[in-house]
Length: 243
Length: 196
Image (cartoon, rainbow over all chains, first blue to last red; front, side, top):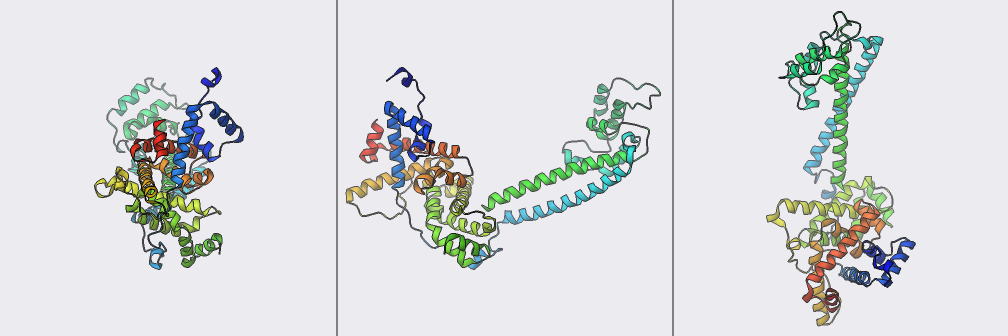
């Protein structure tokens, strides 16, 4: 045996495919060449071939009975899998909820768009109160672990203050201080979720309510995304169970 | 009438047409289920396969009906095995515990010695088959017992050709090792294999 062949890679993972004749021509030829000079692989090939032949020799069992379907078995409601029926109801509910949220989201977007350029300098002074009224419970569904709305989270104000150590300059009303807004919201209603708040509360000089629309949009979008993901997962699961 | 004609009629709700398909494929499906779950659950898995196929027939596309049907059968067997794992005391059949009895299959005319030897080998192989991991078992059954090519097996198992190749190879090697462990019970060719 040559030095090269001694250290050549043994094609053990290709031997079954070699037996079945499914290797590409060049690879088949390589394995065949290797087998002429490698006793270990040749023995391995023989043993796998014996196993394959023994399996092919297993006699075929006859069907113990007919498996044709009776009209009752074939009827749609005869043998519904309980989980499948429940899944269908869940999917229907998800579709309705998704459609409803999409409609509301579209309405909110239209209203928001109607507010024109004002959105860039929206008012936020009383926004936190409106959040409490409009979103109680809704955000917790999306977040899952946020504090109850309407009450400050323990320590939230402290942590916010650590993040916003610099106080706004007196009279600096044209350049909003996001850190200050963050503090305001964290202390009143948002708990630890100050980052997203800061991005939607750029100013303290404009009219009421517009930020509420923005938050509503985000919340509805998150809820809609969740429903779409759940519906897709449910559909895929039902398809797998059916087959 | 060929399969495609019957399938079109069955998809339109013709149960007789579908039952004609059942009669054509029931032996094949039953044998797959028999090798996958053993005699105890094979009938139920076979019946479940055809019920699921009837329900899903409107989603069947193309002309590869056998792989589609066997995929349903493989899933039915997987569900049956999963149920057994969930309730081991109730139904972990002898098949998966290693003392698998010879399956009740017809034998050809042979001499008593040949028949005894063949029966021992058959029992050893069947027991070894049930000791394989489920995916390797399915690949080996589809390839060597059902006679499918790798492309069809890939359709049944929803995997790539490379995965089929790997599972078939590992399944055969593991079967070889398990059969070698049964050494003394086996015919000469397998004993000599284990002596190498």
